[in-house]
Every structure is written in C-alpha cells, then in structure tokens.
Image (cartoon, rainbow, N blue to C red; front, side, top):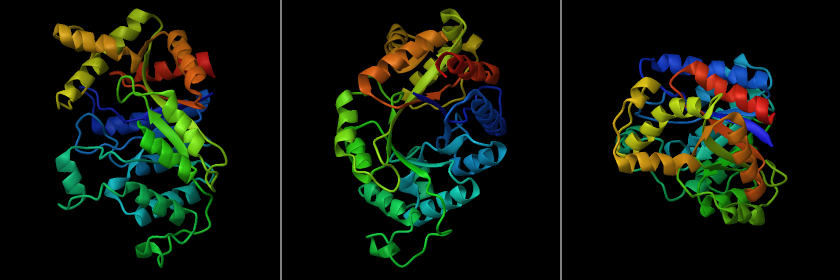
Length: 331
C-alpha cells in the first residue's frame, strides 16, 4: 500500500499564514526522505484556519525543492476555473516536473458563499456541469480536441508534455462512477464525514472503469485525518485541538487551531464530547501501530491502493512526528 500526504497548510494559534506555507515545504521534504509517494495541497478560500488558497503555486515551489516525490492538488476546486486555465496550469507544472505532477480536482467550493461569489466576480457559478468541465480539461491536457465547441479551436499550451496523473476527489457514488468512466483515479475523502466509506462506492468505480491515456487500471486512494503519538494519551492530548476545530466548523466557525493546553481546558457539552468519541472513526488517533492496523483493515475491506494522511496538530514538530512514526510502521 502506498502512503501519501494531504496538506491543508493549517494555521495554528500563535503562528502565521506565511509560516504555515513554509511548514508545508518542510513537511514535503521530510515526506520524500521517509518514502511517501505523493504530497497534495488542498484548496481553501476565505479561511483564517488554512493558508493553502493557491495549491498549484505551492506545489510548483515544492517540486523545485524536492527531487522525486509526486506533487499536486487535492484538489483544485474546478467550479472556479475554466478548463483551459486548469489544463495550461497543469501542463506547465508537468513540463517543469515531468512524471511527478498530479492533477487532482474536486467539485466542492473550498470556501463559503462570499468566497464563491468573489472568485466568480459576482456571477453564480455553473455547478451543474462540473463533470463536463473536467472532461474538457482532460482532453486539453492530452492535446485532444474537446467536444465542447468553445474550446475546440484553442490550444492548451505547452503541448506534448508528459501527462500528469489525473484524480477526481469525492465522497459519493456519483463521483466514483464519473472517475471510472473517465479512466482517472478516485480519491475518497474519508475524513469528511462519519460512515461515508462504503465498499459499494469503490465497487462502482471499479465496475465502471474504462482504461484511458491517464490510467490503465483502477486506482483508489483514501484520505484520513490522523494524529499519532508515542502513547495513546499523548495522541489524544495532541488531537483534541483538531477535535474542537471540527466542532467549531460544524457551527460555522473557522478559527485558528487551539494549543493542546487550551484545548485540554476548553469546556465542551456532553453532546460535544460524545461527538468527539463518535468521530474517532473519522479522526484516527492513537499509536502508530493502532492507526496503521486500522488503515490496513480498511484496505483489506475496501480494496484501495493508497492511504493519504492529513495531520493537523498545533506544533509542527508533532505533525512531523505523526508522519515519521507512521512511515516507520507502514513503509
């Protein structure tokens, strides 16, 4: 099983957005040394919690600061961009780092209503034809004339570059079907919601898969939110700030992540404490062996090829430790 990194460039309390991006580079370099397969940057807008608003730019910088690890977006929020612009960005990236670039896209907005309308200059975005938009972008990337007449007479340059890998992010059967029919990878966001990972969704992807220029056989990755410690107690202590952040997010509050000490003393209701326990299926917390065993059991049950680890702890050294301990256990 491949092991990879999903980085949202989290902004923890007392730290700067610029520092969050610098830490993303540090994490990618460590991940390469540890043998991780790829690093993806998420896309978030209008947030004081995450600094990754332009993931393709961070990915380009990381590509220049590393040698072999794959880099890309997980994902580019395609509702905001034209197929031509997406194609030219990722063809350029692939020309700069041939054989190392991933074009990962998602249908979510990556921000609130204000961000959506600001990115579209006040116009309501077309959210009903996103799969068509993706198909057009994939055609442009591989130098094929797309079916959409708007783009049929426009070259996506640079031409004749090494194809990036292409992935569709999702948490539903519909995304799985579309990824399969387009012949691209399917990346499942396990950390989005409790109970969403179902074998029948992955089976749908495999059943509907059609080989393409991008991929010859089905490929599934699953993204987990993970906090690992030397002991369970250490892991729980470090995980609580993110547990509270998820509760705040459900309340519409996106705020900098607390320190572990602040989180320890933070007052929650019984219902909120129960929500944290329930979410342990989504936020994996424990020793490296416990977390690795859980991921391996999921792999045996669902049949995916790759686990993508997202770790959000207040302290960068603790975040790096999560990736180090997991690599020691799984790679």
